[in-house]
Image 1 (cartoon, rainbow, N blue to C red):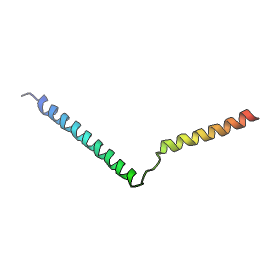
Image 2 (cartoon, one colour; image 1 turned 60 degrees about the vertical axis):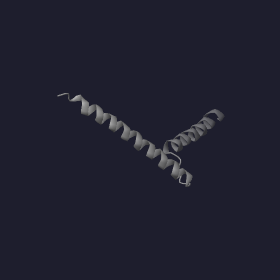
Image 3 (cartoon, one colour; image 1 turned 45 degrees about the horizontal axis):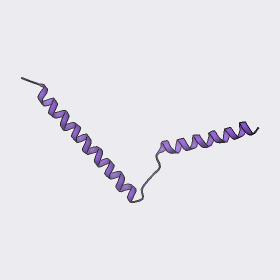
Image 4 (tube, rainbow, N blue to C red; image 1 turned 135 degrees about the vertical axis):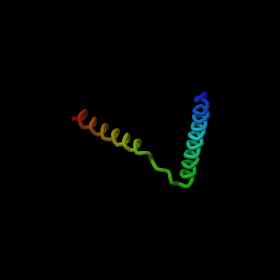
Length: 64
């Protein structure tokens, strides 16, 4: 009547499935990039916009 055995096996299987899903996701991304479907992540675009606006504001405040 040890109930911990099935949960141990289930968590190992679940972890393996998570790893397999992650690997498949990475493979799919690499295939998309090789086909030329690469897109820049939104956070990179947002960071670039912040840097540009910050540089523009710095130029206005320090040049004036």
